[in-house]
Image 1 (cartoon, each protein chain N blue to C red):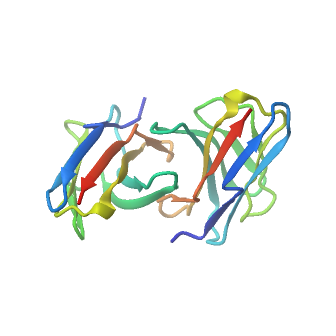
Image 2 (tube, one colour; image 1 turned 60 degrees about the horizontal axis):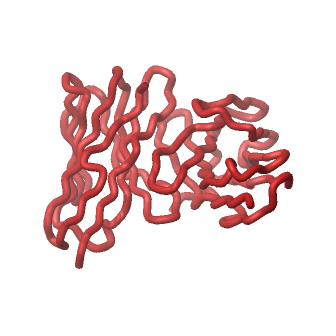
Length: 110
Length: 112
C-alpha cells in the first residue's frame, strides 16, 4: 500500500512548544503533502514537498523528506491553541492519486 | 477558504431510504473525489472523476454511485441506505496541473 503512516498518532503539548510528527510510506512517490483537519471539518492543505526536495518551510511549518528512508516529518514551531487538529500526510505515486495516512491528533494546551 | 460546498452537513435517515449527497465547486477543477472517513480514522477514496462523463471507483469498495454531468457538480447517491453506511463523506477537487486537493466541510451521515 502507498499509504503513509503517521507517528506518533496522538500528541499533547503546551502552547509555545514545538510539535513534531513523522510519516512513513512504502513505495516511490512523486510528492508528499501534509493536510490539517479540524474536528468535524474537511481537510486543508498545508504544504507539498516534491520527491527531489529535502526540506521546505511555510510560516511556522517545516517539512523534511528522506526518500531513502521513505519518511517525512512535519514540525510546527511555537504551537498555538489554534493548531489543535489532526494532521495527515498524503503521498502521490505514479497513479497521480493521493493516499492518506491514518492521521496524527495534536492537542495544544493553552 | 476553498470554494467547494457540500450539502447537507448532517443527515439522519432510516434504513432503505435513497439519498444524494451534493458537492459543488466553483474553481473550475477537472478532478473531483469522494472519500469516506470514520471518526479519527484515515480517508478512503471511494470515487473519483477526471472530467465530465468520467467516473471511476476508488480503492474502497462502496455501494454508492456518482455522476459528473457538469464540471462543477459531483453528487453521490445511495439507492438504499444501511447502518453500515454511517460515516463522514468528504468531497474534494483539484486541478490537473497541481494535485493539491481542496476539501468541502463534509457530510456526516447516520443511518438508523
